[in-house]
Image 1 (cartoon, rainbow, N blue to C red):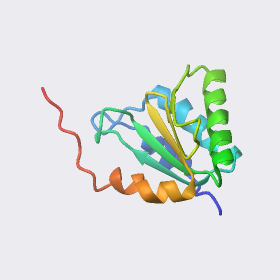
Image 2: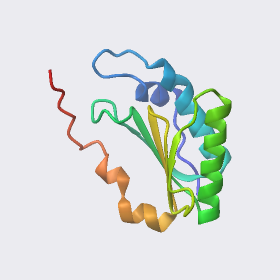
Image 3: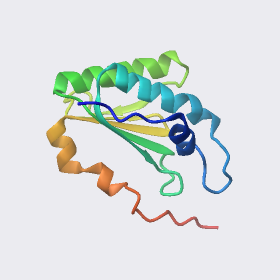
Length: 139
């Protein structure tokens, strides 16, 4: 199955904050690094969700599928290694022992790597999709 290509324009748009229109420098290097690692490891059905203005937990979420538990684990291991090697520190990781669903939280970007049946069950794309209301900010 082919991966959905993301143009440079779309990638730039996903790092722009709606309030100021300013680009977050940390995301400029982080998102391409994560995308590249997922594509190199042959992750399938990549979906990038812009979370800016929807939640304060992260600026972006990437959801990907691995073909088996071994593939999910290999994808996660590669991303964790790439993040460390490129100076993004140690990401928080959940689910690596079972490899049904691995969550990698870098702070600014959250990556979910699923086995196909687990991804279908949780359907995060629907939960965090464009119809999600924006988060209220208290003053």
